[in-house]
Picture (cartoon, rainbow, N blue to C red):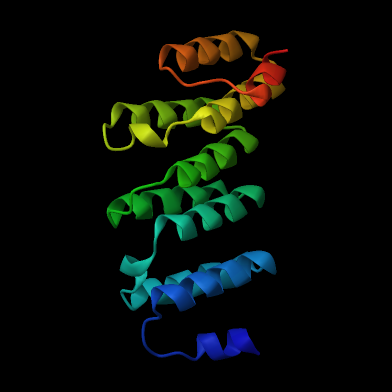
Length: 167
């Protein structure tokens, strides 16, 4: 019933209502409904008030569903709208890519973000550990060691997950 009321709203939603609706669609695993909501909201010009955490939630949900086309669309949309990723948003993107067999592409994304002065601070231990895990699961030990060396070279600290992955 609530989603019916949301669908009947004529004007663009504010950030709080939109974010709450996004989270509700994700929790009830209604990604088709979420896609339709976002399409309608975009037509009304309302995506400008959407923040990085909401994008992170959507990227994570679509990644878990294996919908990498939508994951990449959301990432590009963020860039087009000038929404800078947070460490968590970048972590969600990295995880989505790694869990869907795109570890090499995820590594390139992380490198690109690191090369950007304003985004370098988003790169952290969790993101690199995710990359390591992705290469370890696919038994690409050469990449595991290369990424580990890169991590250390960039001054990213290691944690228990990092070391367990290396074992």
